Image (cartoon, rainbow, N blue to C red):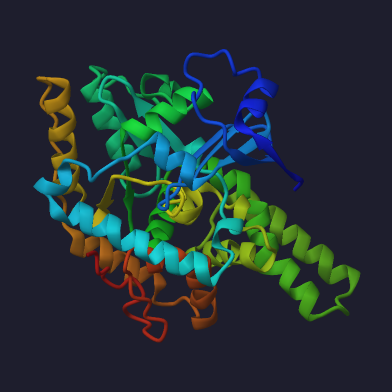
Length: 375
């Protein structure tokens, strides 16, 4: 990736943004600009560093520029529910440790694709599949008066982040939040919703690759002397199993773990991607982190706040559900997963375990899905 130094006034002119009223004014500091992909990004780091990508360029603003441009205190909800502030501070501290000890930032992809916002309520949500995202989508639809009409194909009623300068304004001023959940619980939930029951879309899409990873690629590596007849037999098995779509949980997690071996973590489906890869919490200064273990109570606090500021009279309630059954179900699914495979899965979700205080019980067959220790 090439990098050059520019004055911000020069680069804004290059991008045709120097005459836009929303453009940053009165600042002329040195920044890095790097040729990047075509998508649009905006990042707000815990130490004040911001990044905007416009028309295929990344602009990394210096701390001095950012400090002059914004000063943001704690979110008002921190006074109502101190755990929100405690979690945010805890994640920021752990992020500094992660960033100093690894190439964490180099291994995360932009999360803007998974951001959605609403201007009426001035809220921005990073979507984490299998962590209450569908529940929140329904509640948002209700808040906007679309009760019973929500379809995922019509998310324009709760829009995804788009224009870069509007994005900068929203990220800087709106309430930003996401819901986090135990990584192994998300894996179990993703498997149950996408590879069992009547939902066969992802099963049909990934079945061949899953069966190939489980029954052909490993054998080929371990037994380079496989004869042609054996290979054809395995290929036929893959074809038949892929058509049947009867993928087991062991086959599923073996396939997910193979993304680590194949150096393809950035290609994981969002339903079983690490939250650090979807939302980049170490580079986005989120106001509210909701623990999925307490999603009903904490989501209600946030919704009440948003509605109060919006003067909305639409009653929105989050229903509570038993946590014990969900945790026990996760432990049951992981009970027969080999230790070495659980180690690979833990490695994939390592930063999620660290940031959100989940203890990894690698040696326990019965309690793989341990309780978190949210601050």
